[in-house]
Length: 250
Image (cartoon, rainbow, N blue to C red):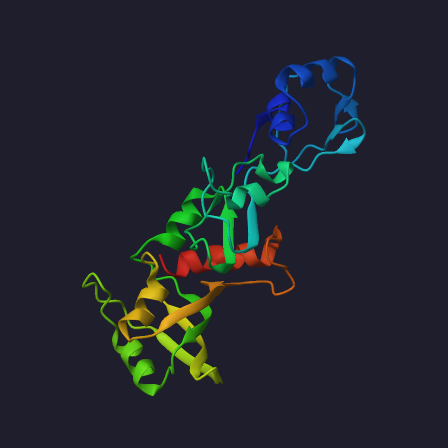
């Protein structure tokens, strides 16, 4: 589908200046389309077909952005907050231009995979309770997680407010003992995203989550090469996976 757009709007979207600054650049001959200087800053172009350049540099236009963030502790999953540092504060200025927002939320002290995008339709599909998008977490739990807990999670535990959680897949990775206390490393896949859900599920079986990390959401897996607080754009393959997941679960 054609995405025809004014040249000044295109360049402004890509962070190359205000409309008035771009109008001035056009007058100075700094903006070209297919190698020819633009005479009118209101010129309509199709960015998929035309080669736009600003001051000799080719401009690759995009109107959607998909970022994978390895969320660190201490930041909140919001676009803005008067008191707390947000995940948007971790982005470079150029990556904020298209106004991405977090898809869902991770608790302030939870780390791991967080998708940031301005694709509202995709975000809606991933968050819709009816879609039952799988989310996998790794956690360190205080307490001896055993087969009884695996079976309880598979049946669906009841949370503190009476909500019956959907069946979840719990795997015990290992257990270790420190200072007389047993700690269990686990992997847990849930199909919903209630407030503090993983922590509340373990509280329901008398255990306490000490550390929590999300490693996947639907078909998207956390890039383990990303340090906490680092992010990157999704690859075309990852975006295609998400879109394909949306269609097969629609």
